[in-house]
Every structure is written in structure tokens, then in C-alpha cells.
Amino acid sequence: MIVTGEQEGAIRTGPVPSIRTERLDLVGWEPRHFEAFASMHADPETMKRIGDGKPLDRVGAWLHLAMLVGHWALRGYGVWALEARATGELAGRAGLLHPEGWSDPELSWMLRPELRGRGLATEAARAVLRFAWEELGFDRLMSLVRPENAASRHLAAKLGGTLDDTIEFMGKPMFVFRYTRTREPPRRED
Image 1 (cartoon, rainbow, N blue to C red):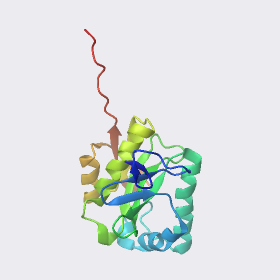
Image 2: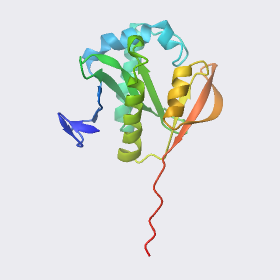
Image 3: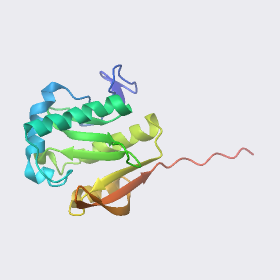
């Protein structure tokens, strides 16, 4: 649900809408998120599934975060910071990326290692899908998933993604999962 403060169903004023789920708040990036963001992106185990597979130093993490923030300004949508509602701490990120030249926006997710396996990525990704379909009116999305990333392959399929292709991305193979918005057929009037 998109929320304003505690109220469900309304878009918050400002450039980045917030979405509230059962256990997460999807919010715009703020400076207070940087330490946990940098730590998450410095983890070799996490980063082997992302981009070129290499961890980021603090400067690289800062530049990556700046790209995520700038994406909202350039596209009007992007990747949210995932805050755990119970603690307010950064749990990860999820949202939509659409770099220049890509056929479709990418539904993406990433959690801090200690928070994986709890269904948080599923919760966040479902909220992002609803936003993409209902608020942005998108008809197609994709997710890029490393073949060895069984958890993300499972999640993409669970979200309704179908394995469409295998491409080379940043020098490594990547599965392309496609999501297509399902629409109710028009009702016949008798």
C-alpha cells in the first residue's frame, strides 16, 4: 500500500512515494541509510550476485547510491530503501531500474545477509509489482538473475516471472525473467 504517514492508500507528497507492507516501509533514500548500504555492498557474498560480481568500496557504494537517487529524478520511479518497521533499520533495497537502452524496467531486490530467508524480499517485490502495475501502468517488467542464485530464481518464479532468455551481462551469464501484467477481460454487456 502507498501511504502518507500512518494512512494507507494515499501517495505522500514529495518526489518519492512511500509504500508500507506488513513488515517493511519502502522509503526514499536518506543520508542515514548510507552506513548500512555501504556495508551491504561491501559484502563479497552479497555482491557476487549483483552487477559485475565485485564488492564496492565506500566511494563505489556512494556512487551507486547516488545513481539510485538520481534514477527517481530521471525516470519518476526507482529503487526504495527497505526499512524494517520493527527497528527502522535499513533491511535492503527493492524497486525498479531502467537504465538507458534496456527494453523494460527491471524489478530488483537485495537484502542484508542476516535478513534473508524470512520472506522480506517477497514482501517488498510484491509491493513494487503492485506499484508498477497500478500506479505506473506498466505492462511488462523483467528481472536479471544470476543462474547460480537459486533464491532469486525461486522468487522471480514465485512472483509470476517466466524465464525468457539468458544474456551476457557485465561479462557473466544472466537469466532474464519476464513479468506481464494480467488484466481482467472486458465484461460483456447483454
